[in-house]
Length: 468
Image 1 (cartoon, rainbow, N blue to C red):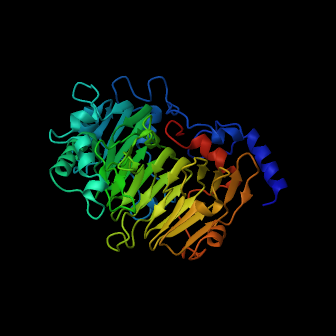
Image 2 (tube, rainbow, N blue to C red):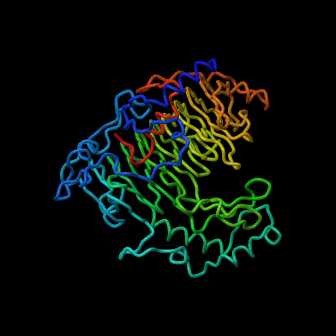
Image 3 (tube, rainbow, N blue to C red):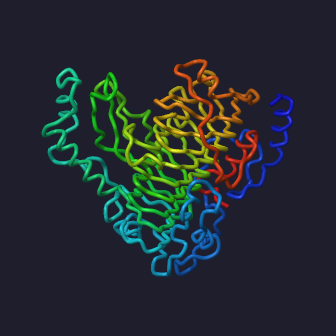
């Protein structure tokens, strides 16, 4: 694409944002695409938040709560489609304001009756029955002691050949079970979870396990920190700390739509954690991981920022339940200094289009991870990179063989964006070469925007509080 055309296009975009079907066109300048993610706003709610005086649904919230995924909007539209809890009766339509109400409305995750759960305002999952905050000390097993753990499993003492075992490791595992019982949020089939009034779920892990037909929209998820990460001296050459909880976890889940949510580490970034046993003490896992045979998922208009392990699609290189599944569409999301896995894919056919990537953090690793037997089709994605980020590293080969990457624009600093063949620049820097043909062509697309418009379209619509 010639530079004069790009100049004209950017100038035109500075004056108006193309209308979108998913959010208000409120951004009016190209700089807004690089501004910090907005705080969750009312998302167009009235003063009452779209809720009637009696707490029922009305107006904006009522319409969105009954909305289903469009018939052509990504892989989640395949099969039986994704309708969530749109058919819920009055008895299964609930507005919740705290942890107890949220868990009561969702039940134990096994009742398949259609339900709508509206999250109003902030919910902190790490609070007791009286709403008082809990700390890691409240979850620790009496036999667990971090200092003793570090001394016992120091590689100089324990070695690097085997994973920890014994009383202190057993106490750590018991501690994780206590925390998990507090912060996990099991979601049943046929559910719509919708946020209003600046909805956020903090210190919690939404789990969709072996269920189907779920919609999650307009919620800010943050800081599902693991108080007791596992130490694995066999992970790599120097060992690693591995945390347990994703902000949203799909395991064996089908027909799921994640839309207009925000994902971050909140005010507890991994960069603030200490070095322990010679490695960063990592307390966060995935933002929205899709694993263990999950299938037919659409991830749209979400805002991922300041997070490390962002989106893992497929958790093992071993063929099994993932083969023929893990079909996911990822479109119109913002990945702002998401350091890796945006997404990383094994086995699945994954359509990645019209996403905006900001890769300027010095710890940025890669965006698109090409894993075992994966087939990523990446089209019309827009990258802003720091000068130290090599375009060859926007793709990483994780034992994969192929990826289609077309229509890509890459901007360095404040320069004009330039078209880049991501596969070609990767192959020029690394061996073995990746094939530029993913072996399939997506058909389930609600819209495909020109790449040059992506920063403004996404900035206007992605994330909690920006739903139309």
